[in-house]
Length: 299
Ligand SMILES: [Zn+2]
Image 1 (cartoon, rainbow, N blue to C red):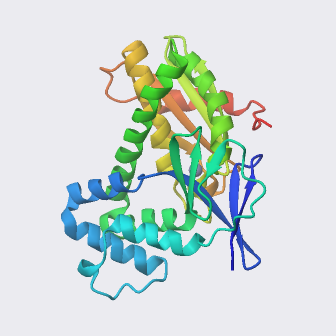
Image 2 (spheres, protein in one colour; image 1 turned 30 degrees about the vertical axis):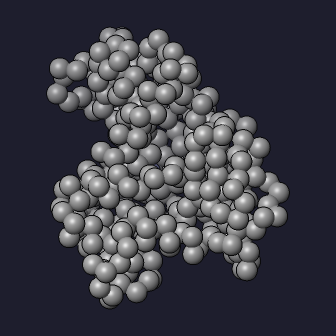
């Protein structure tokens, strides 16, 4: 049976409809998976990649007892799983946002003609993260997820800086508030607001509130889960800070839907690049003041 996508831009959610069911999906940049696999291989060798693949197949309910060394690469397997899940995608879809052009019948979408996205099953992303934790411990998996996602954020900065020519962190975050409010719902990444506040020493605290952050989908636990999203924005902020004021940043997810909070909240605080680590007792007082404000998604 053909599947259809449905955008809820207000909530920042894309659903796939099939067999009378609705499941949340997202747009991910073409090739986004490869750097994660490279990093797993760099850390634990080819064997680790195979173990993560086996754990992933087991988690999604596929046959994981087969000889994994005979399978295609992780990235190819992952794409096959997603193709099988989505295709055929109905050509009769009406509510594709006008910003996208669509290669009909495939999972491939383009925005402004050049950036390619694949519509991806969100459950496979979450199961991939958890498969990494099964194999390498939560700490090891998070380190890899964080590094790769930060690199993606850093790459985005270079282009954004050319386009927007930001002068300082406060201006950049105020502008990021508008940019991410517009783009994130298109990609199904949820929706957010960013608020910059400069402290008495001139360092900017960036407070972000996220609704429907994609990593919280069907998750519960005692720790915040948004390591990909937080690290991505930390990568952007780190480059802004380093290049515009010679500083560095530290970040934390201070609230997360997966542990029962009504929304996720990220804090990115600037600091002198020689300062080892921030005193979060002070930073906590700073963001809690912003957190009292009435902050709502745009639109
Ligand atoms: Zn979260």
